[in-house]
Length: 228
Image (cartoon, rainbow, N blue to C red; front, side):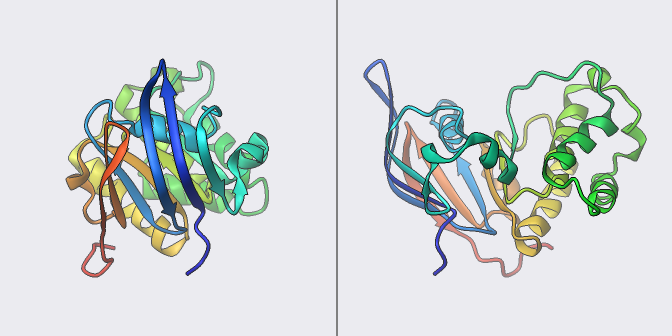
């Protein structure tokens, strides 16, 4: 088996003597979709914050690509990772086109830019929004554009907090198909959180259930029979 992209050992996070996260041994492998499920305050967003270096004080070790995550320069790490957060602050002056272009340029400022930009605009059906100012978008529209920008940047690792946030069932179905192709054909590793894992049965490779900061259930899914 290939080395995992993440290897987590004896991970523990405490706040005011309360243990909010406690994961003994867990691996995340490349090119798969890991869905982190659980109720409110189960530790899902906290787990992502540790993986994305937003929190750097914890017990235990997180290895990323065989290196201690704490030793990796954040700027270098950010070239591999794109993050769709649950909370956000809209850029005031940027247009949709600028916003998506900037995300792609961060990782692919080369001859592939036009192809990547046009592909994500077509697959997420957002051409009609390109000239709009980000500040004028509704929460649902901005969520869709933020997803497009981060997916379109072709990261090695895509992290999405509360993946269903502000999305209709039609949007969720469309997003699942796009992300399925990203994982299974482009080799992107997807880690997402949700309170509604049943919405993503056709996408999930591994469903991880968190409860009070602990993994209480781990279920793997076969790709056979999934929609492509």
